[in-house]
Structures are given as C-alpha cells and as structure tokens.
Amino acid sequence: MEFAGFLVTLGVLFLAGLAADQLGRATRLPRVTLLLLLGVSIGDAGLNVIPDDVAQWFDEVSIVALTMVAFLLGGSLTRKNLTRHGLAIFTVSLAIVFATLVIVTTGLSLLGLASGLALLLASIATATAPAAMADVIHQSGVKNDFTDTLKGIVAIDDAWGLIVFSVALVLVDQANGWSSVLSGAAWDLGGAIVLGCVLGAPSAYLTGRLKPGEPLQAEAIGIVFLAAGFALWLEVSLLVTAMTTGAVIGNFARHHDRAFHEIEHIQWPFMIIFFLLAGALLEVDALKLLGWAGVAFILLRIFSRLIGGVIGARLGGVPHQEVPWYGPALLPQAGVAIGMALVAGERFPEWASTIMAFTIASTVVFEIIGPPVTLAAILKVSKQSPKQ
Image: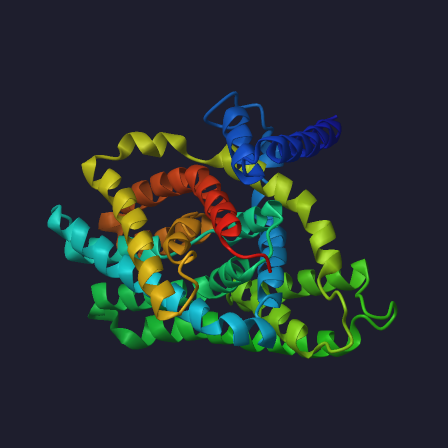
C-alpha cells in the first residue's frame, strides 16, 4: 500500500508540473517559480502533504537533474561559442564574483559582523542556480548572443565559486594552513575536470554511431549516470564533471548533428520533481531569523550582481543594450550555496547557525524572485536587440 501511495504521489506531482508548465506558457511566469511556490504550498511550510518516502528521494533526483543541467551547459562551451562570447563569459563571471566578494564583505563588516564571517558569507553569495537558470533560458524560447553568454557564465560559475570559497576558508582559518584546504579543492575541481575528459573523450567518438548524427536515448542516459556515479564515488565536483563531459563531447564529436537532443527530451520529468521537492523542503521559517544584517546581506548581493554585471559587460565589449541586464539575469541562487554553508558551518561551528540562517533565507528569496527577473532580463534584451 505504501508503494501505491508513492506512485500516486509521483503521478500527482508530474501532472502538477504539467499544469505549471502550461500556466507558465500562458502567463510568461517562469515555471521554475511556479513549481517552487507549488512545492512550498504543499510542503513542510504549507499543507505538509508530501509523504516522507517521496521527500527522501530529493537527493537522488537532484543529483540526476543537476547532472543533466551541467551536461547541457557544458555543451554550450563549444569553440564557436567561446570564440564569439568567450571574453564576455569570463569578464562578466569574474567581475560579478569579485564585486560580490568586495561589496558583501565590506557591507557586512560595516554592519558589525566579524570580518571572517562576512568574507565567508560573501564567498557563499557568489554561487548561482544552474538548474533554474537553464530552465528559464529554455522556457524563454530566446536564442541569441545574450542567452548564449549566460549559458557559458552559468557553466563556469561553480568553478569560480569553488575556488573563491576554498580560498576564503583558508584566509579565515589559517591555523590548518593552505595545503589541506587547497589540496581538497584541487582534487574536487581538478579531479572533476580529468574525470570529465576521461568520460567525454570516448563518448565523443562512440556515441551517435548507431543512429547517425544523434546519440540514442540509452546512450545519453548512460553518460549522465556514469558521470554522476563516478563523481560521487571519487568525491569530486558533480557539476564540473558533467560540465566537462558535455564540453568535450560538444567540441570533439564532429559526426554529431544534435549531440544533446535526447538529454533535453528526458530532463524535464526530473526537473519537475526536483523543483517541486526543492520548494517543499525550503525552510521558509529561516526568514524569521533574519535581522537587519540578513536583509542587508540580500540587498548587498543584489547590488553586487548589478555592479559586477555592468563592469564585466563593459570589459567584455558586449552590445550596449545587454550591459545592464547581466547582473539581474544572474540573481538565482540554490543548492550550491547551501552546500558551501554546510562546509563553512562544520569548519567554524561558532558561526554555523548564522551562516545557515543567512544562506537558507537568501536562497528562499532568490529561488522565488530570481527566475522571474532572469526571464524579464532575457525578454527585455530580446526586444531591444536586432534580429539574429
């Protein structure tokens, strides 16, 4: 009977996702936000009707969903895309990271937070939400230089975030020296890149042979599961592994016409469950723990994104109509930040409750308001840009 209830719940969630998708098409609201809000309403903070055995699948579903997202984002880092948008991808992403570190650290320090705590929160604030960003870009139906650049930025964002966060940990706690943390970060990042290349190289050559030009669905699923499984087994970055695998296939599979077509077909059911359960498990009560410093943290992150986006866009030489919109488009924040907060809390237990309260609360805010702002930015640039 329990399994029957499990299947019924999944059926209802999939149909709810379909309804959210149709409502999003009719209203132009991001379906990510609709799914998250629906999840909040039926989850712990609302009606609490999600069975525990379904909620327990969140980690597994998120692993598969995020691996698919990272794989697709990595596929956008082709030579053609990097030749056209590489400068903008690197300048905007680096400028936003740097601006976030400086502005958030300075602002929180001036409000009285310990400088080490302020730096840790700033490094956590550099993280974005690849799944939400990718889905909003896909839902918008817009394909232009702006969305191509956004995909590239989101693809490498977690790499920058991991580096910055690792350095911040060392600076705040030099007692353990640089070697222990940096060696861990090198393995997490470098090991993931090596694993992605090891998986991507044979996949680029072997896939798409049975059905010329397009990998079969079984091939696509197999690569995604291999990337996720080996990354978890070797304890390296899941997102960077999948991103690297996608980038290698996208650049070296010359015989592919539509290398990632099947991934795009199969990822949506996983994304429905991912976003619904993410909303259901959001700790909305964390918003009650925020004081003025917590509100300032959210506002400082918004401000730093706006400033960093403009600086990076100008340095990257993007068209003038795109310059103000990179910062707003990169507001979403999600699970990567929570992961960083957990690590920081374990390293500095005296600040653990503050770090988690700030991070969870800001994630709730940016999960809800971020996707609509991203969609608005994409549509605004699309209207202003000449037809491509």
